[in-house]
Image (cartoon, rainbow, N blue to C red):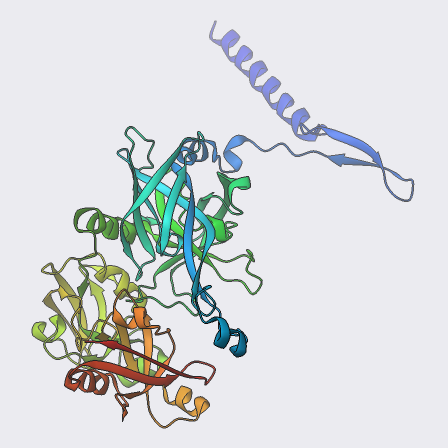
Length: 486
């Protein structure tokens, strides 16, 4: 019996070995389908068709179909006033201005963008530049329902605005965590790229960069920490959704960089972690309660790393600590290098801005620095952003009647052929904007007295008994004048 078992096992082993040899040496058949075609020379060739499994490429269907319901089309009406200045003086002499000649004329203009419903009771986030100065706002949902909307609050610094419609039970997009986005991660952009005719358009791309600053961006507070993607975005996408594969909102599409005005491969979105913080303040208070650290800073490069004897080219160094600021009270000093805030690694100035923008005035944070080659941690209690004339902010600019000012760059002064002046860095609501000030303008005189730094402007205006008269030149060197009462 034992011999018989041994024989049977030997036969089975031999059979399996023979099958393996035949399988290994036999011609392999291709499981992929083939097609026979004739090329340009008349030669018959065989081409192979490759079938990819569903797992070999991303599936956006859930994210697209769920998120698109919460993205709306926003149409705005703006009343612009146009001054007719080239009327024949003899005609005006005989007829005067009784027919309206020479008087500002009102003209209605239409604009459009996108928005994202973030609360079922009608709160919608969009871009400030979409709804700025709008006299009427109309919102169209993906199901073609239309509502009139009102502005709850705006924040020019981040280009975020909140509008509201009178409705309940609206579809929303869950908010994700933009800090968790990874380079190369797939994202969808949803909006209305060319207005009403292309509402609810969905495009796909990847996260190209994080913490990106945009060329020529001007904001009241200059929060520049954008998500860059290559998802196709055009002007009407402004205010629309940037979502991940889960269908979570990770950003609000804001701008493109293009020499033609159309998409050329670069689009930018405000990270949802910043949007979330701004939106909460706008809904609760109507304005943003912004925290500031009170430093001017620069990014660490190899030269600075060598001079400061740093172990790596990382972090930001402090150029200046503003007197009386949160940084000053916490003991931060010039030439300190910030490498982390509450444990989050700091790589450049934009990452500091992005992190600080997540705090409210009065919040505390642990800031890790390198000083004299040694690492240490200090605790900072953030202060409110400057609002009164003469107060400085995170960037070192000075508040002045709704504008922010800084000493003009020497190269700019040289180009314009002037010795000294003060640049208008940004404009918010206030007397400067109402009087006709423009971003980029250089203030040369205040009430006939020359000025060379923002403190001069504030001091001269403070001494004025009745009004403030400002003279200067714009970016192209043309002279401007404007004034306002105190």
